[in-house]
Image 1 (spheres, one colour):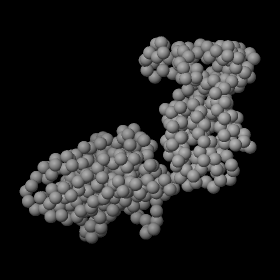
Image 2 (cartoon, rainbow, N blue to C red; image 1 turned 135 degrees about the horizontal axis):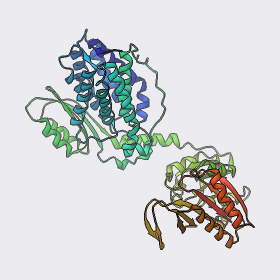
Image 3 (spheres, one colour; image 1 turned 60 degrees about the horizontal axis):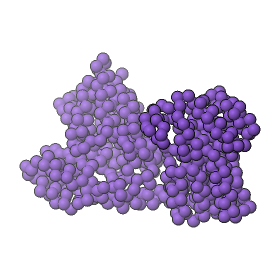
Length: 543
């Protein structure tokens, strides 16, 4: 195991890191959930690191101090976007900590990583958790913990990568934007990629940059259409470098810029000040910057225009319209593999996963409609909160969309059973309306909090039974509620009963509910099906 690193080793580590980012940059780009505030994260990190690689390759036998300084200086000047600037801050702190070192042990390198983190947090005006900063911070903690027992640099980087991976997995829970898109932080992925490549190089397995034209495989991507252009508060991504031509305090500039926008990062050394900020007034920002010195570089991008282009591109890709192969098609919304299978057996071309607590968007429904190879598409929302989203698709597609206003899964199933492929749209719609009105829906779930509803005192953890849209009753005994629902079903003379049990109910428990209904409703035809639905222990259809 490698105990120390010198300048040659550090140079190889950085070159390997740049190669690894280049290989994986497209994957990192596709994780960039907020479309274009800083361009593409992977590309920005790659171009920033490659600027350092170019300078490192020109240096002859640099010492560790020299190699670290060259890397930090080149990154600062070549940093692109927010991710590139933060990357430069991390390496600048490392260089600062390694100043004067010919070699670094694990303890020294772990301390350098921590200095890099402190440097980055200090420079970012409003650091947010669930980002590359979080991943880098916890990775440094992992390195410091590891070297308390064994002072090996290889062990420090290995531990940093392992702790960083855990932190990366948790970013989806820390950042609401990531949670909405269902992905981890793109910058965090970049930092873990860098640590992994540095470790490989240290072990004698340098990462080689791909030849021109090679692309990394994309495994996951975030959806730009989940975000509205209006979500971009400040329109212009503004980046610049000014020379330090006077004694004006950069901290005063930092404070002023913080009033002009967000996503502010300001770093400086003895010669330059580098700024990244999102603002609606780039002209004023540049004018203020000129009071510190001459402009070395400047870049201003309109993020609203970029976002619109991204969304249009994604919409074109996602909304490809299937050519009609038949007169009618069907799209249904439900949650649970069992329920999904029922709708497919009834003829649904597309089943969208959704329902209570997870309503699909208009875009989700539109994509399913457009993928259905039919001229006319019947949509079964199967939830009152999804009907409006479904109806919004009608003017958005060249297909005829007919929304059957099913408010529950049993209503949707009954409506589909009434479908006649030889009837007109109007005839089918009328038959489906009658069918969904003829079915009674019963649902058994639980109380998430204490409340008083419709004269019922409800306590957290109680079982709740709904009959139609009304509260039927509450109890600590689920079987007593089942029995009450069965008695009401019998009193109304229902002839066909279907019990769909959810993902939290096993078959043996569900059979108890079946027996209760069979005993209470001896004249009804009763069936039991595994619906697999979340939230609701039972969905019961009676007609």
